[in-house]
Image (cartoon, rainbow over all chains, first blue to last red; front, side, top):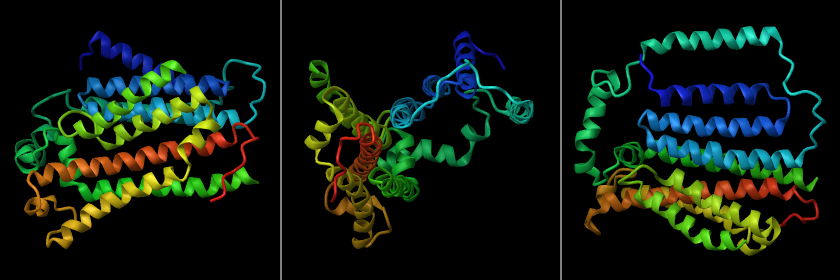
Length: 179
Length: 139
């Protein structure tokens, strides 16, 4: 697996931001590190040639989520920060490190970016969508065709889940605000 | 404030572009809806959260979100009413041409409405505690 300079830089940036979000003691700094992490991940999606996901990650992860986190922070009182980093317990490090190692072992098994022989790109279903999506739906973005036409029912479920989540949040938070 | 007033219509247009043009380029209802929601947040930062709430009429926000769900389900059930299956856009072909494409666009718009409503709603909900002088709206 070879990395270009850009890919390597973004990967280092993302991992650094993730560590910052996990370790920084100051909550505001952690939220900012998390926003930067989301931005880095959205660039990663672009590198992986998934602009739809990248756009979502940038708008939701780096944009809306950060605003909501900041608003939630401003509603709470934050204790004085006496140190830069969170104290680290070795048990946690061992657990997280072991998990990261476990995930990391699977990475070399992934196909290279854009590999035509990979199971996803060469699969029968993918080929069907790529060949027939425009003829059947008159939509050039195959992602949209799958999202709204072939898998329309799933997308409806997704929309309703988002809607239901906000209804629950509304009913809970409204009570909190009144009390 | 001047910048926000100047930029807001362009961002809203961009949001609609992402929603509609999601059929032919990256984007779609989810992304466009978030961008549309961020316009309201930007207005709130510039003009104050309370005046934005008053200007927008908070009841419009859940109406937007549930309206999106209704549009989506309505298109699905409409296809059934015409004798097809749920969300089978081709059934609308009898009524107007390019029905599949426009059906998808409408569904994307519905998703955009849901997401924008959700984003704005959550923002206002969290922002109400922001300055405690704001009296809670009773509907």
